[in-house]
Image 1 (spheres, helix red, strand yellow):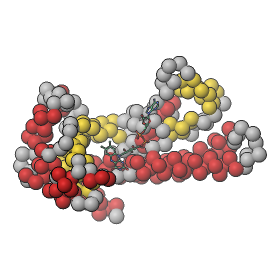
Image 2: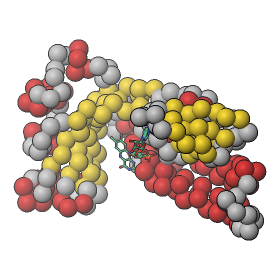
Image 3: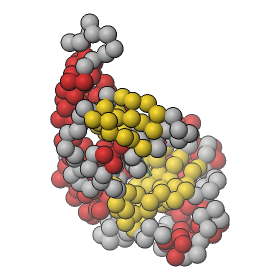
Image 4: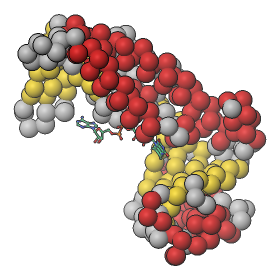
Length: 265
Ligand SMILES: Cc1cc2nc3c(=O)[nH]c(=O)nc-3n(C[C@H](O)[C@H](O)[C@H](O)COP(=O)(O)OP(=O)(O)OC[C@H]3O[C@@H](n4cnc5c(N)ncnc54)[C@H](O)[C@@H]3O)c2cc1C
């Protein structure tokens, strides 16, 4: 989709690259962090949190990287100190995903004259940030398979809401992009989708006999019902995620993060 055109009465025309278009009575923006649909719902733009994750990947870890696999265990391992972090997560198939977290400028690599495609240069720069860390943790930086991936962490303002607008709504990151420290972004996106589908199905039921699907009025009632559940839920999760990233990649880490966990559980 390149852009949306309001047609009045809650209808919108979706324009696609290549010139095609389609008219719909309900458009659901499930288009992620840089959502274009959000442009018609207040137009909030994500801010850089001040934290960048540089992603490393370790394949077949139990066999090829047994020390990293043991450090990570069956779930996730976080080592946090003085605005830095090493966060390792076990994925399926014996794969480990490691986030090398830095509180730094958005353009840190440009300032340092580093080409992100130059894996050895990126590795040297990252190791220089973790000189006093234990060799076993530094192994998460030295042992990766393949290139590093730079992932600056952005988040929408908290709270992010919008005035209800007939014919349009958002779900997932488009609605509530938050730092991964919530641990819930993908789960919330799926829950949003399920809640919206259930709300539409419940409201459409009353129009079951009507050819062409539920009326615009019933669709609007379904979207209102969905937003009344989704918005407060996502505001609470996003507030927690903002607190957690501020405490996790902080000068006194991990002290603030432990206090954050204690206050929420
Ligand atoms: C480093 C990192 C680690 C994370 N770790 C976790 C974790 O451990 N657990 C967890 O639950 N969450 C995690 N998340 C968050 C999770 O990835 C997101 O919350 C989740 O992917 C959001 O799903 P979504 O479908 O809303 O958006 P997305 O996954 O971004 O999907 C949006 C889709 O819309 C498409 N799109 C965008 N614009 C257009 C357009 N104009 N036209 C057509 N299509 C378009 C995109 O191509 C994409 O396919 C992490 C995020 C990051 C950055």
